Amino acid sequence: MGLTKLVKNRISSEWKDIFNHNVEQLERKQEENQTSHKATNERIDNLVLASGGDSPNEVIDARTNNQGDIFDTLKARIDAGENLTSEELKDMNETLTNQREEITQLSGVIKELYSGEGSNVNLYVHAGRGNDTTADGTEEKPFKTIQAAVDGIPFLAPSNFSVHVAPGVYLEDVMIIGIIAKSITIIATNNSVTDAQAQETGVYVRSIGFDNCNSYCAVRGFTQTDPQNGPGYFVSFAGGNYGALENCRGTKNTKNIDSYVFAVWNNALGNMYGCYIDNQNTVINALYASNVRFGGTNRGKDNNVVAHSIGSIIYTNPTDVVKGKTQEAKEYGGQVFSS
Image: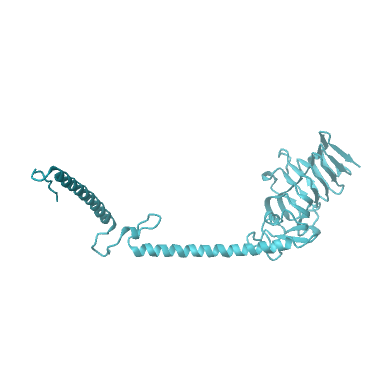
């Protein structure tokens, strides 16, 4: 509906101007209302589902979830949300249960680890029945992997830690890094009844490495396995610790693996005894101010290099108890002293 302006001059021109101005204002408001009504009608057309059939009139917004998915009916969207919430609550409850078990496990381990100065802490590993998630380190609930067991050792603790590893195959490159403790010993559970010089120990590991541990560190009762996929050594002691290697066996042929060393001491002190080493590229390597005793109780043959000293000292008595193509190799002032 349009408004007619006053165009005749029967009334004063001032009054006419005011009147016409008011009419123009009304016309603009009318146009704005028409535009608003049009937008509102389009919004209603978009929101309201056409009636008819079995579907009730529903607002599309009410049938749309927060992901923008539109459901056929409002009930379908509500049911889907409730089902999703139930699944989420189930998952959350399972997560909380697992976390409670892990916290209980961790609390038990921490309590044992910090039980006092000079205490003996025993952690157990079993490849067959161990479980790294639920383990508490006891014989009844052992770890599955050696790495998980040593990861449970705190960085600073005044205790003697022994990780007891049951017979089995552990295709691991175990790393013990930066731990300050009285001692850390990785030992096969059958170490006392096996002789690595006579037979394989039955406890196989790819590699074990100690790095910057201010501790007495020891590895006892293991047999070398899978060296081609390892880090280039069987056992390594690096960074100022004391490392002892006892009753271990290495017979996998590593002669063609460049730079492979059965046992490495790098800026460390140590001792190697009671081991059997055969077909190795290098048996023992002492690097950078290391001081190592290569005991006369070791045995072996058919190695490329037996004792390799690089800026270090190796004491042997004598080296030919373990035979190789090269008995002694010395670089950068390294020495091999044989009694």
